[in-house]
Length: 547
Image (cartoon, rainbow, N blue to C red; front, side, top):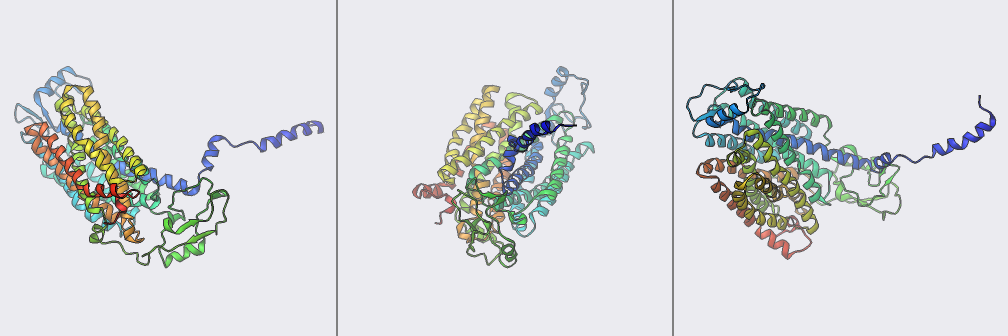
């Protein structure tokens, strides 16, 4: 029992407790609007989805060192590193040796192994390049969530199928080539879909920085793919493909369950907030009422250009206080044609630039571990782990390119500067990397920054800029098509680069680097007109300048 006096003394404590401040973490959580949470969720989900695509592409470059080995090196390594997990003389289910000089997995154990391994790269990348031109056009006409889910499930299946060749002792070149071709085709569903989805959610404000950070999924996927494939490459290389394939398929299910294609699907805004005080009772200031949303059945409205706030940011605004402007040309919701996309100013120049930039990047992607094995005399696992430093540099390169291009508002000039610096860096790489492991590490990081920076900027922020170019007059159906054209053209270079590396490398790795420097110079030349236009017209990115 409590006395009256005790109740009187405790009552003030109850009042104080009820008015206690919320914990810092909760205050941070509630400080973000509903739109911001959905935008962040879409950002990280699309990041993970495309990282899984790149995760499944990396194993082939890691496994190359295991598909073909030098018998003398293998024998010496087995004597020195005899362990209970892998007894001396263990070679898995491989066939008996046909000669005394080469070890490996037939048919890649022959003298022409570099051409055969290059054929695997070429078959995947050539199919990817051809399929990319069609993928964007198809993707504009199908629900992104279904289209992307199908591509991820199919890609996971064919990535795993390549690894099953190890367990079923398959030595047919045709089997591996066909698997690569189909996998290349289904993987074209990924890039146009995720870029279109992200472009729907984020306006042009700080697009370079946001997409530069987001594009690090490429390097993150490559790093994870290298580590996963490297874990099994020396003991059971089939799992180097099966595990990444399972991850891609699992992410496809996640995509089907959670991907939100457009903010209007959940009545959100695609605008990035310009003021921190933009909410009233946790709701967004820019919110279309039900009667306006109902009118979308007649006219598709672009929320990024239609919602103009009437507040100066110093106080709350009633949800009905807004102005609706109909964008020009929104009466037509038809997807843009292929030739129509090509007529957008800057599309052709950036597409050709990406062709050469991606040639350099994908040559590193598919041949770097084998080069490190050759120069630094490391096994396949350690070479794969070391090659991830190139992707670490690529993360910083993409972010740096986006940040600088946003600050200067000059996309082409930013790409041109990094391409100009990349050429001498590649020459230095070919010379310095032979001086030891420490030199190789330093050059991998620097080359990753300069090689991946322009590639990342063109495939993300530039593609999104051009896909929402003012010449489209509000047509919101061009982003996936423009993205597919640019990345599809780049993928032609991605197919040619590894093939040329396989043909040139027998004559010496220095010749491969000369080829890469020439491609880098060609990429720079493709942007000369846009760079000149940017330097003469300050304040506008290249994609917004109509010739």
